[in-house]
Length: 217
Image 1: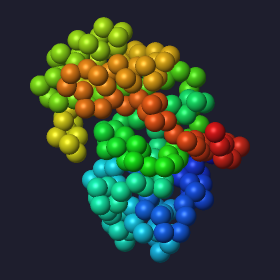
Image 2: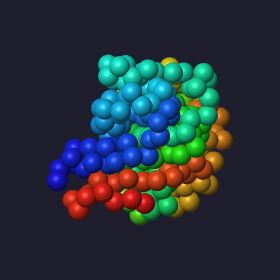
Image 3: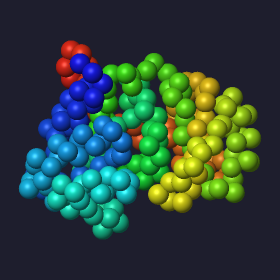
Image 4: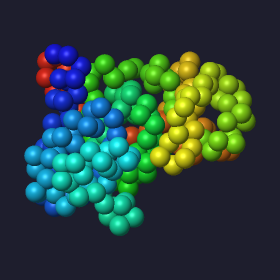
């Protein structure tokens, strides 16, 4: 089974977690796109969706799914999104697609976070995937120095601006042994909008597409 088939398997399995009348929080990225496409098949049963990026909002609307603002939708029953890395404890690295701030906001506003991924994303320790950190532009140098003190090698994501008008630094060479502590430490740095560690609010369910079928953690 190739990686796209595994992503699709995990994405389609998430449909089983949706109840009639739900407003669905929807993430961003290639696996989330498979979920949006699957969601179109039951769009008559849901009340709409809250998107974590402009790109996901456009894809939802192209399927005729109503897109709501989170402030109008209130607390959501479920959020479905992919990840760049995930552990058995369901801590994640997210933000490869650059939507980490809105993803974290929607995840935090949801009762259940269902993470969908292929099995290559499952790791023992977070950090091999460069950790995205969204910054206010003027904080680039000072935050980079702070990230170096943690043992990381920060690299500006060239030519990229988030939907919020900010920059992203990708931090290489971090071994994240204590994800909650690291998330708190980086979040507290001046100028940091969001760090792509999702451990304080991890996924509740991890659906992994594997060669042997679906794995649920």
